[in-house]
Image 1 (tube, helix red, strand yellow):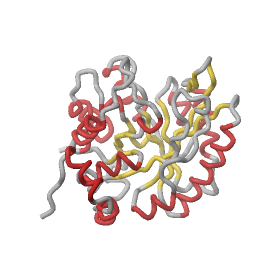
Image 2 (cartoon, helix red, strand yellow):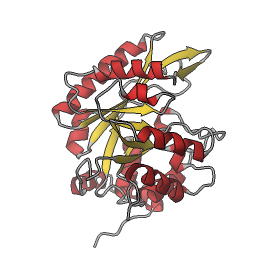
Image 3 (tube, rainbow, N blue to C red):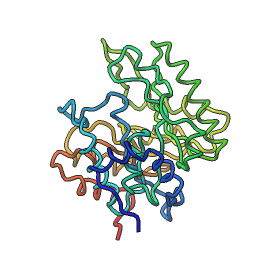
Amino acid sequence: MTTIPEVSDINEIRARDPERVARSWSDRAHRPLLGDDGRLLIVAADHPARNALGVRDKPMAMASRTDLLRRLLDALTVPGVDGVLGTPDVLEDLLLLGALEDKIVIGTMNRGGLQGASFEPDDRFTAYDAPTIDRLGLDGGKTLLRVCLEHAGTAETLESTGRAVAELAAHRRLAMIEPFFSEVEGDRLVNRLDAESVVRSVAIASGLGSTSAYTWLKLPVVDDMERVMDATTLPTLLLGGDPHGTPEETYASWRHALALPSVRGLVVGRALLYPPDGDVTAAVRTAVELVHGEVR
């Protein structure tokens, strides 16, 4: 019987047996993308690689990898959580911990647009690529697409994202695009979270690649979500985003948006992993109930 390692064992495994990562991907148990209700709850853990370590008023909240892994383990053990989205380092840690069995696993592809950098809109593809996602048996790849008309880097991001969508589709893997219409304000890149801007980002993202057969969208919850969802026929997951306001306000906005046609569930990271009261399991159970109803 294989012993499942603890978080404290990961460093030793990585130092002495790096090939265990490849063996673990090969041995991982899989599940269908969608269950009977056709909905998904995915936990996101790809923020640190983009220099986005802050949560609310704590700029280094996600700096401890061991703390992040323990929070992810708590989240992934809650019944009704379908899977996780992350960069190779985080997913491999979870893989070694046995946390990815029978889970949907989405690999993040572009992390080059570092938060706060002058080149932030230039979202270079620096993590997973489509051939690796297929070879390792991941369920799909996720791309971040900030459309900034003021920055020339957007052109290459559009081209690279279109190529990634086509390559993932060629492997019959889900292509999850997270689009924003963005603008530069002072020395910061700001995502415009009004309905018209989100609609424009949806229109641009939906047309990328040589086919949209495997394309899903990951969209922020904004006012007038009915108008946003009328802009697409693509399956859509709602973005939890950087939490603001009270959890009750956040859950209410999710509940309303989840009732709309084409919305298939949630992709949430910081709002669930770092709740104000510290109770990760309770926050995740609330999200499960919103997405799947009561899970026994």
